[in-house]
Amino acid sequence: MHNKGFTLVEMMIVIAVIGVLAAIAYPSYQKSIIKTKRTEMMTEMQNIANKIESRKLAEGNYNNIGIASQNFPANNPNYTYSVAPATSEWVITATPIATSIVANDGTLTLDHTGQKCRGTACGKGNEWQD
Image 1 (cartoon, one colour):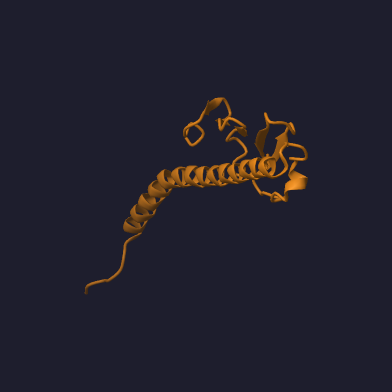
Image 2 (tube, rainbow, N blue to C red):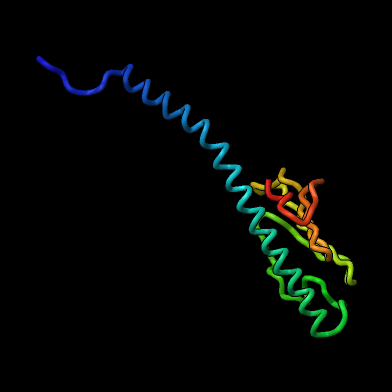
């Protein structure tokens, strides 16, 4: 007689291999998700900066550049953000929500000169991405 099927040892080896692969892949996947959320927020911050500068061109001043007056998106599941002060030297700050996936990723800022920061890493390039 010839039996067909898998032995318990063979099944355990397959499960072990899958477990090792999952342990390696999951942290990489999490980093990718966090980077995507950060990029989405920085894109939104660029949009806010464009609206601020458009308002300056249309009205000739930076009065009333607060979020409420600009119809900025009111909610983001990962960040809260603000614009301050209402002058030519504005700064947009996005703070991670404590219960979100980006909670430990650092505060994002974008200022009137185009400088972007994530935590303490600042510059006009891609310092905020890693």
